[in-house]
Image 1 (cartoon, rainbow over the protein chains, first blue to last red):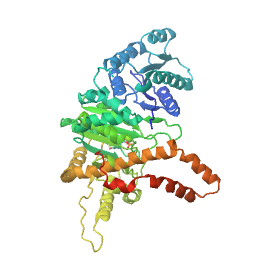
Image 2 (image 1 turned 180 degrees about the vertical axis):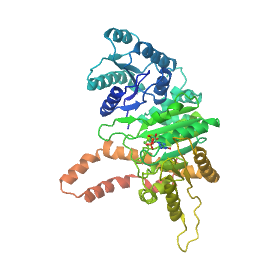
Image 3 (image 1 turned 120 degrees about the vertical axis):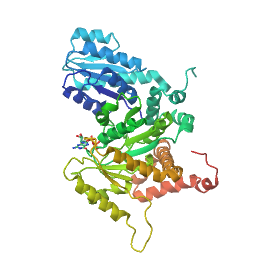
Image 4 (image 1 turned 30 degrees about the horizontal axis):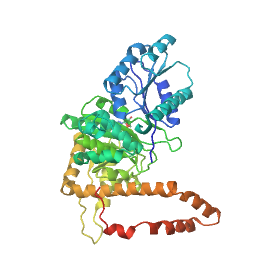
Length: 141
Length: 332
Ligand SMILES: Nc1nc2c(ncn2[C@@H]2O[C@H](COP(=O)(O)OP(=O)(O)O)[C@@H](O)[C@H]2O)c(=O)[nH]1
Ligand SMILES: [Mg+2]
């Protein structure tokens, strides 16, 4: 009777006031059978990591449009690691230049999605990645 | 297996990651959960458990946040479970209750967990009671569970909480509707939230009257109900009357205290029933393959009742029902 579902935190760090994109992604992930915790705007890295911990999510997805991603994304990762949550699949999206994407992907982020990414492909990426991870975990799922 | 301490040890040590993970095990039906629960059993039963239910938009999440905030000013620690519906089609869920509990996010004396209903229809998830147990063992003083909140009575919350608070607000129905929906039956405390809105006073009067009608001794009988749910007004958004709600909850708890163990045992027995039924359901219709057998019977012209009678004739003698009463059962 095991029923494991992918749990995702969709969070918006920083000050920008646009969460349409984040909400769209949240509902697409839901439609792909995931349990999505959506937190609303203006979350600090500290809050995001704390929510990820309490919710024991498998995935944290960050969305940012203000351009502050290079300041904020690594800090979210730091806060996660500090809480022994470094294992979560960390992804991000928004208006992020190619170079920054490469840098972040070398810095603990699994995947950065640029503007105009097909939302279904985000869901498919997460599903494929979690499938691999759970298979590798074996009984320790 | 490994030298690192077990998850239950880590939980009893106060590690929040262990708390979060054990709740996940409960939700996922992880085979390791029952033995982990056994290891923390000694620490169960200390937390007060309050259920918050009522129609969508009544202010359950906002009120939950306010109750937690007020409890924190008295140094009580608070664990919160917020249940939202899973889609019956995709199984996915959007869990948004904690948006209204934002100021408790980084409070070290609070822990908020969102939970999808995962196919349960009684307002909470199958794993909600397990999750409350884990939070209880972790050491929270107060546990609050917010139900899905569809506007119908969500009876499972009665089994999960010591005290059930039904939250209503002006514009979302009157006393008669509350009676019809069964919400009055599950209420230990009735809250009229949004007292800052027009119509709140009327609703409170209306509800008090409905409660009176419900609990008045029937003609010719003298039985006085032991507990009459009080009607309390508050505004969760304006932080008014929250302490009155807490006082009403405390009063109900004081009323229970003489027989809290008995009260909880009845509820616990109900959980046992759920667990047994769920296992049987899976065993009969899944593992043992009765689904295919029944499909054949029906295809062969049996009515649903004939097929059911045939299944029961096979299965019921196999259940040691008579023996079970006399047999020594393991304690739960
Ligand atoms: N005017 C007023 N609005 C409130 C009050 N409490 C909650 N609300 C609002 O009612 C809406 C629904 O609240 P929420 O807590 O999410 O309700 P739930 O669906 O029952 O959990 C939100 O917009 C709240 O801001 C209150 O006391 N007064
Ligand atoms: Mg709510």
